[in-house]
Image 1: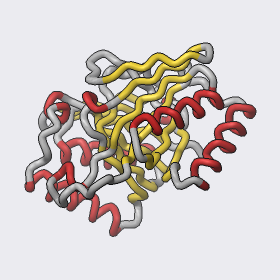
Image 2 (image 1 turned 135 degrees about the horizontal axis):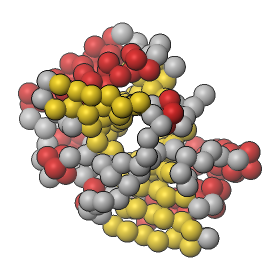
Image 3 (image 1 turned 30 degrees about the vertical axis):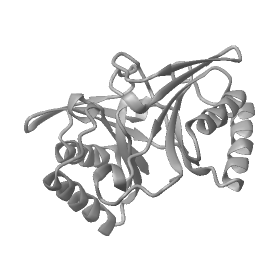
Image 4 (image 1 turned 90 degrees about the vertical axis):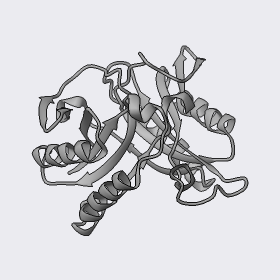
Length: 236
């Protein structure tokens, strides 16, 4: 079973201040442990919400709202990681995603790169990577027509070198939310409603059960020092 473990944005992460060497050491240590165990399949970090865009598609019309966000709500249905040359190009691809899905909300955010963390100088004319997280009305599942249209579009995007990866999530019935305070934590099993805390980053794990995913989610939250972690199973 594959799980997406998402840590949520908080005031500290929203400042965009890079993590300290000690924090980076903790994160790399945990990621190394998971990689060595063969259970970590990938992951990404996102820049603060001030760098993000909310695209709301209704009736064939698009409403664009630029960050920062404080009260935007999301309940992720799936995501696509894209590589483009400009922000406008990323939005144009999201317009085509909306043509396939119909009414949909997309949160589009640039991914954290090594130069954002001070690991390397930013290369000239560097391609941009954006994570697009989409949500349908409530927790509606894709119809066969929507799924076929999205698969056809994703095939085109892969062929053009735009789509790096994509996943659909199972409903929140298969998920959990972890709230951390100091050394303590509480777990709320799904289903659950939308959350005003936007995703700050995620890791994908191959694990035997939701209970195992929650255990890693608790460790992940303490490692990154956040207050909320969401665990969601990926769709088959």
